[in-house]
Image: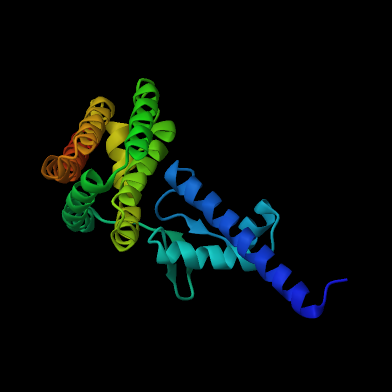
Amino acid sequence: MATPSASSAIELLRSHSLTTLVRRELERRILVGELAPGDKLNEADLASELKVSRGPVREAFRALDQAGLVRTEKNRGVFVRQVSVEEADEIYEVRAGLDEMIGRLAAERATAEEVGELREMVKRMQQVARGKDVAAYYPLNVRFHDRLADVSGNRTLAATYRRLVNELHLHRRETLARGPDSFPISTREHAAIVEAISRGDAELAGQLLREHAMESRDRLHATIAKKGQVTK
């Protein structure tokens, strides 16, 4: 029979595990667009749907808030994060600098095994890109850049990068969804980045990742302009 202290420890572990599962499920829904920017998240409804108590859902909300995926408004609730185009511009500029550093460090530190892993990720992205299915492609794109951040070997840089790019999900998804050439451009740029890293060319890898980020911003503006023309 478990002692009170052991029971408390087990319950704490279970709560943490449930919180992680809830957080991952909500992250997945945001990434694939099941939860849209501005959507309100109801603690009680989610707890019932996911068959957990409200505690893990509440803790998951806190973690997602810290990660920049949701925002908590006093007396109003929790909402999926929305970012204006003006804010996105600023974020893209900072992201470009972080991406350049990630590229340089990854080229200097990547092992042969890590390069092979990145190549396999690009192959998978190329396969999925043929169907132009944003819901299938976008999570792969996110995982590729997330893995690159890990390959840089700098945990502080990776954590800062993740926190920042979480705020761009809406705009990155929309650019892919509305830009007919976005898929081949994306996969081509990713392949070039991996090749530069495989050669240990830190300068080129950094340059390509910086350009990749800024070109993403340019494509966002082109997408918005095109959408404005259609709605006029």
